[in-house]
Amino acid sequence: MWMVKPHSMMESSTHRMDRRSYQHHYCWAGVYHLTMKVSGDLRQPLGRVVGSVGIPDGEPGAPVVELSEMGKMVEYELTHSITRHYPMIEVQEYVVMPEHLHAILAVKSRIVSASGRETHLGQVIAGFKKGCNRRYWEYIEQRGKPAATRMPAMDAERRGTVVDAERWGTAADGERRGTAADGGAEGSGVDGGSVCLSVYPKGYKVPSNGTTGRKPLFAYGYVDVMPLDAQQLEQQRRYIRNNPRSRLMRTENREWLQPKRLAVPTAVSLVALRGYLQRECLMPSLDEDRWSDLQSQILLSNGQVVCDSYGNRQLLDRCLLPVVCHRKDASFFSQQKERCLRAACEGAVLVSARISKGEQTIMDEAVSNGCPVVLVKDNGFPMIYHPSEHDIVLCAESKLLLVTPWKYKYRAVGKSIGVEECKTMNCIAQALCRQKDSWWKR
Image 1 (cartoon, rainbow, N blue to C red):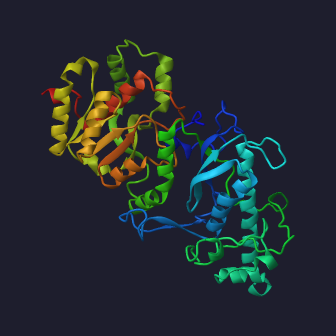
Image 2 (image 1 turned 90 degrees about the vertical axis):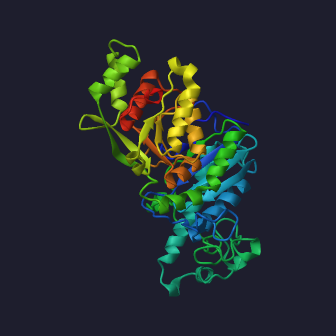
Image 3 (image 1 turned 60 degrees about the vertical axis):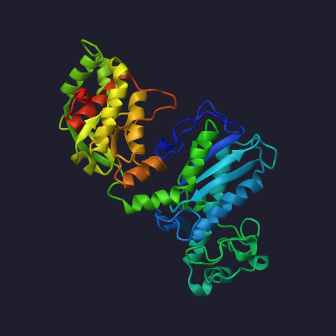
């Protein structure tokens, strides 16, 4: 049931929407975490996030998405139409956000259409989008008509009343959608009424996108993430459930919870960095091709290395101490850990790339003690960057600052970084602190 995951979830929202896992056949059974975005020129057509970050989930006032008429239509298509046409597919978890949606689809057996033809996941998603687009165009066409010429079903729906499905039907199957009669969202939408966007008389055909040039509701393609095991699947479920809360946190902390480009200078020149790598990597002369490749990945401003940041940069104004664990100091690790954690409790901010097990232990314990830290990340921040929920909370509380000296680069799961990258991040940690990593020995 578990499959190869083509890229990490934190990277998924920024890859090309048509990136696929080349070693996987999308007709196979498995679990897929899908992300679909609305067209770029549409601004939050599916609803809005409401509630308070301080209220726990399940209680009145907790963060939720208040769906618009469009959003309720998309939710219905997602939860009803896919399974109706492909009974082997189950929508296990989903969230419809104002301008995108996430869904976990469990494919129980090979995907086969009603005609018995083998079908791949891309065709399933294309059918879902086609249905949403058609209803979107119907809705836009109706909203553009004068009230006197509008179909009576639309006016009834906009007043929050139940539409006579026997008379007016829907473009799909004549069902009434989102009404109190079928357990829908009575009073839950922006307009507080029922949802029946496909209100044309039975047999009416809306012109297709190809013949009219109408813009679709959804952007081209989709992003898929395939969990490797049950633990990753549960992480992705939590990610989906926490989307509304994370959105509110980013909105309320807009200054911190978004990437800031070239915001953190390091005062490290390329010449100084190359000299550092030659000493640390014990290379009398760093291979020109390797250095050229490394140099092309580094963020630069006026010939010096700079970092993008995510979080409260005011942490950099405090006493900063680098945490770098060397193999030669392995026998003194207890002393290093004790000294680092004591300094953190006294108000210092620990800075680390968190590469080695020792560095991970020290930094994780500092975080668990409520001490603020700065992490040097091993990849750049994509255009749309969403850290884990845990990191977002820490950033919002000014307990974490993420910095990176790298341009964003797609990296396949399981592909590790080289020694030169590790040493570069250790160099940056020390440069930010204006301290050598041996400070704890004094």
